[in-house]
Image: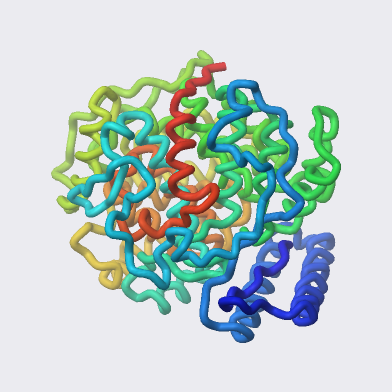
Length: 543
């Protein structure tokens, strides 16, 4: 459990005494939640309780000092010393001073646009930008095109989904709809501030840095160090992650201790979604690796925090999906190319080949969705193979022999059966208010109840629900992210995973300007993530 953030009220902050009182209450209730966890409620109940505690603390802090967003803080203890290859040791993207200073700048100063007029050019600070028919500001084609655009879209899509879902984490679908009858389509101000991401994105950024530093290969010890280095308590980490990452900061980690740290606090290992939420960058880099090599890489990336088979299966499925989508053109949901060959796993080959789909069943009633598809297709016209919901799910199912848990296989099969039967749902000319009243939305919610608990803390639940959101709203990636949030539960994580997959397929050009412009843009913010994406796109690890 992380410390609650301070309230930023101009030059005023909570008094030291008041903060101690708040922390005492917070930590006492957190210990109670941990005791419940140890007695069988395990991770789902623990996180659910701690989430409610955080909400209560946020309300308390807000009542004490109104008038500004919550500041985000970095550790004053400095960055961990990390061994980096010589080529990247002096990178301009690293923190040269090696010290994290307290960041008390307002969001307006940080470039998030809250309490200030929107910038004249929403792309300030990034390569030259251009508006598409979808009204999204994106880096110019000369700066980001082809595969680089897919990588940037994946990471920024994750960030946008994370930020959009953070304000309603733990809410039920009914409560989210009641508060947002026209759909939750704009960022909310949270305890972290407006446009600020959570631990979901922070850990993905840390993994990205590690992959770049290690020349596109996963190193379990280096990745663990990177997670600890990037760690900020105010991002909303769970209690076990806090203990592990702080332990790495204080005591370090090596090839011996990393084998046991993942089961130090939960003997069987965590089955949570913390691995699936951060794994997308690895799926990009290992997009042409054999499935066996990819699974080993996923396990290494998760080793310090998640060693339970459920956690590894969920992350493996998302990594597979991201790698598959990043090298294919998006085709309308109604177009279904042949499923991948069932012998793909047995041969140990990399990505199975699909032929272009040729049979359409009359369209999907979604003409406006062609914008994002056309843009991505133009940029990626060198990609001959197409992706559809049915093809993606058939591809994932073809690797089910590599999944260790029956639950993940069953959830994938359920989503596949549902999508093949139902095809596309909401059309672009249909409002969310109209769609919420439709039988199609009711069917989506029934699917969620069938494949997942209400709070998708299990990795297989989160992976299956995110895939369902993407496939049910295939032709409109923005709608897919919004739907993922309206399913309720662990909204920031499910929407972040959905956004990562959508970005891997569609690049950056589907991102709405109102999201892109308002992403936090300080250290490890939007512009730096764009730079990291360009560097990550250079790697294609196959073994």
